[in-house]
Image 1 (tube, rainbow, N blue to C red):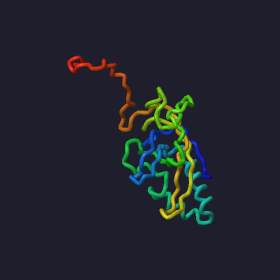
Image 2 (tube, rainbow, N blue to C red):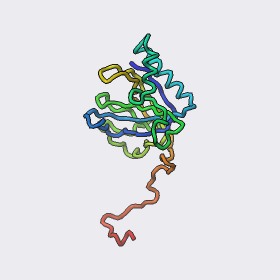
Image 3 (cartoon, rainbow, N blue to C red):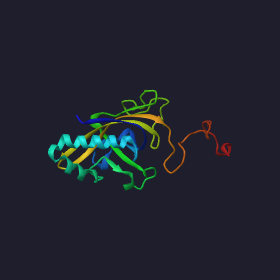
Image 4 (cartoon, one colour):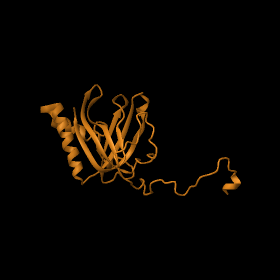
Length: 195
């Protein structure tokens, strides 16, 4: 068992919460989510403490030097300074990326009402489409673990639960998508009818 942590009211990025995606075409399907944590947030400190505790539990007496090497390597650590990425919304934040392999079962994805958004077959429950999307705010529960295998040493996070918290402006300053400017079209309508 790793160290579990719940993050509250964090901006979501790069969400893969419907069907799992094939990671780099290697047939290792997984769900993913990235939480943007403000650099001056108490949650940043909590993540750092959890990562240190994870490293200490895995590498014991050697943990500090191993931790120091991992924490500065974006390929080895699930938590990186947003300034390392040239993405909208990342400045002034740290990015925590968590994955969940398909063989562990889908992550729980909840609405604000605690109702699930996705069915076990990865389809969306009626009325729940668009409730969780990249750039909205979420609560997220993750579990940290230490990697030490043929692929090297690392500190990783497994995605457990994502809960919608509130809407957020799209990255780049736009607003969340809505269908309010559209109306129902009669089946078989001619192009002239739409003019």
